Image (cartoon, rainbow, N blue to C red; front, side, top):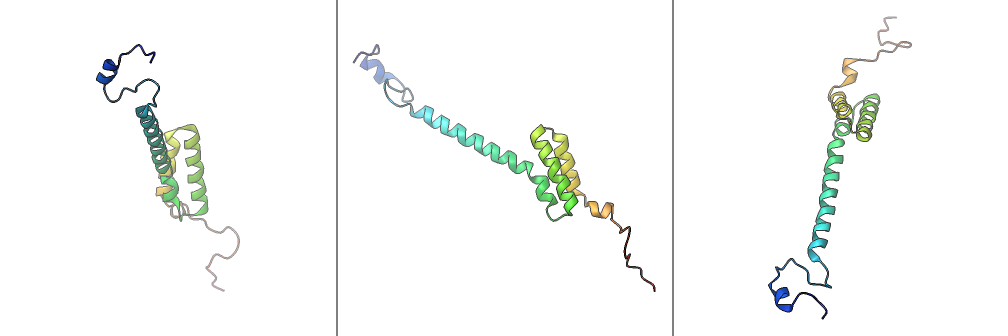
Length: 112
């Protein structure tokens, strides 16, 4: 053995110190834990990012598209104002605030 550390010194080292020539299990454990934490935070971020889309589900098509576009803009620009606007638009039923009346065609008030 051409080690500069004697066998007595190796025996006194703590358990987390890897002997020369062996695999560092602690490094592998920390690396796997880091990957799992990053994947967890990514999943949490995308779950929070999808809140306006879930709120707008079942709304009118225009409202859903507007919320979806604002969500994508906020995702790519990392600007929270777009996400807050998407939440506000998803929370308020736009078809009740701005009812669409037909300009041409039957109005439902046929007295003839």
